[in-house]
Length: 122
Image 1 (cartoon, rainbow, N blue to C red):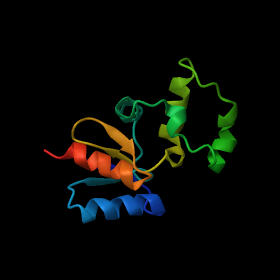
Image 2: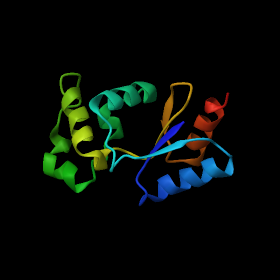
Image 3: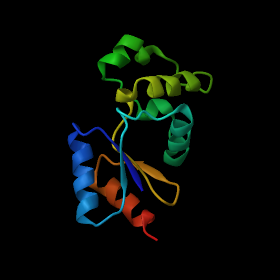
Image 4: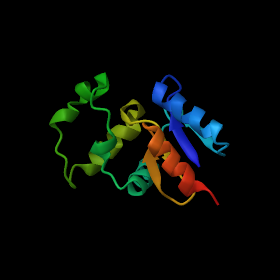
């Protein structure tokens, strides 16, 4: 299991604490320091069963600078959204937890974190 975090994020820290309490084995990825590639984002989106605009933090200043609120949300625009997430990882919703069963969740709630933990068990 891997968890993408921003160490300054309270939701990320809560997810880490919950995983620790449950004795989960996981790898931490500080995605602001180690941004995901386009390929990694494609994989995570497939696992999440979401589109890039679904995991974009549109309230971030860089989102306003890029004009993301005006970008189309369609198949033709998808590569641009993914490139923006890769180029500006601060835009990625967090934390994202990838489980060993090839699924993933955005772990913003205790329930979401626990669901990945249950699926990730051998």
